[in-house]
Image 1 (spheres, rainbow, N blue to C red):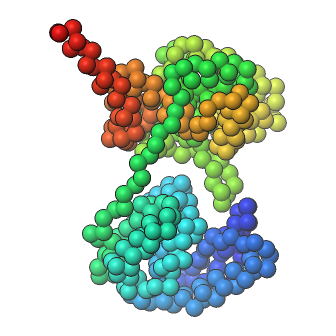
Image 2: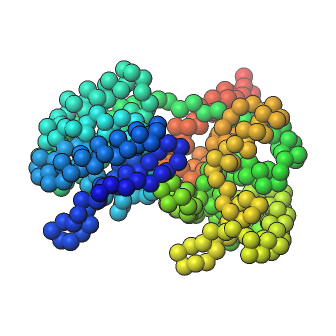
Image 3: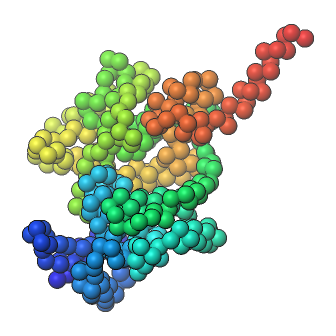
Amino acid sequence: MASYEDLGFGKFKIYVELGYDERGNRKRRTKTITATSERDLNKKIRDFEIKCFNEKDEPIDNIKFSSFVDRWIKNHVEPNLTLTSKEAYEYLLNDCGVLEHFEKMKMKDIKKYHIVEYLANEQTEGKPLIPNKYLLLKSIFARAFEWDVIKINPTSGIKEPKREKRTVDYYNESELNHLFKVLENCYPKHRIMIKLAAIGGLRRGEILGIREESIDYENNSIYIDKQLRYDKNKKQFYLAPVKNKKPRTVYFPKEFMDELEKYHLQFKARRMQMGNLWKGIYDDDGDMINLLLVRDDGYPTHLNTMRNEWDKIKKRYNLKHITFHQLRHSCASLMVKKGINFKVIQERLGHANIGITLDLYSHLEEDQHKESVNVFEQLF
């Protein structure tokens, strides 16, 4: 028996019930698909249902790639990884063609050459995310080897594809000064959000995950330990640990903290005025999560809304085009220019290790290297 859930934007999640296993546990397979019409949707549901019933008694030592991926998600991804990682893996599998390429092949028949050839073809055709697809396949086959589904791991010894060198665009000091002048004419919430990125180097999810109790006005700091996420399947917001699961305290200028406190007081007055109409979100214990940068009715602000508002401000004031995330780069670039220690920059941005920080921003030290010559000029 098959059913489906409408995920929006032409995407649907199909559920196929396969009865119960020998332990009495419910057996169900799922697949996310894109459908262009109701007829197309019904056809894909039917095809997946037939496929599931044809494979339901598939011996583990003869299992196909698509069947093993379902078990890999159920037994490894869902219990051990975050929802964000699960969504990223499903995107690579379903939207980027990995599942389509390998799905009919038996796990035991997939050799190292098949994977090398697949990655090489992807590179030749200029398709993105090749290193991510490699890491996905590496994880799948590592679990298959660990669980004795295959005797040899075909990804073993395959060199990870090189990632393209990321170019970092940002606002320089004068451009940041101009931005802050422009922001004086903007809606207070949007002004606060942009400054949190440009001064604090915070990510979008971290900004929206700030709660009232995160703020320390006495020490001019904000404790960053959560990020706001959105579960597309459940259609609800939730708080997750920050990236790398390393909370950090970020310090801000007193002038900004005074501005934030003024906004905070207005926010509390609005919430009190709204009363029962306030649409906050709640934790597992039923307590309201005191998010600060929310919509006027108290409901969380979506990450895409923040990006869209930033695009409007850029267009309205004819600002140089950089993404909202690159405001974070602007923060780091200014600190590099001012000679701030890279370890301090790493901790402020919440990078997992200093290597990431050096890789992104070390090229900005070129001017400092040139200026260092001036130290010796007085000797001549």
